[in-house]
Length: 286
Image 1 (tube, rainbow, N blue to C red):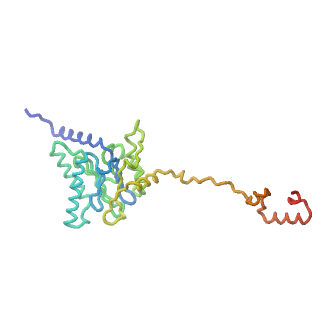
Image 2: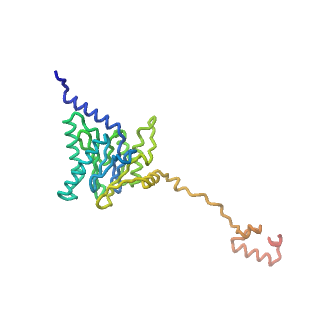
């Protein structure tokens, strides 16, 4: 007799299986800032990228099994190139790519025994901050349009604090500091924040002020300098170096051991008058 399981139980088991696989990966933070869209991923590999470019103004970020989301990324690039070549490059948009990913992941989750253990974010930068589009696509094909997105890993514990502090007019350094602080807030010993260095991060932006291809990576000295600037303390920068005490004694007075020259012209005139009258002034005492 063939084993029977209800459809609800099958879907529940697939969801649990996919969530466990995704939770083992490190999170990716995608958020908007004043100059475009920022991608920050905790990734120690320099070749297996979690963040990539899809098209001119569209970026891609994913968490989960690398072979699975790399296949999806490649399919998204081909789809964008096909539409851009067939019609116009301006006709390619993030919603179109996100819908294609949602259909693909939904079909895999329903029809195949093993679902994809991936979560994807598709971001499109617009001419203004209000035109930016961020889409989160989960393993079962669900799509969510969010202003600030946390994908994969410890997403549930990160998203609440990130949304409270996120603002659309943040500078790049402030947005990077917020994203790194969110990633470092989980995974530490005894619930304490972790220290994340530049070598553990994969950072990229969609720069709204660039024409053509807006995607660029922040690596090396540029990323290190940006992290150092965002981590600086204003109090330490505003503190002035101590100045040496000022003195009215001239070098000539110090060499001769005499008294300093009077700074007031009235005092000097009185001293000359005393000498002319024969009084015992400072010169007579010496």
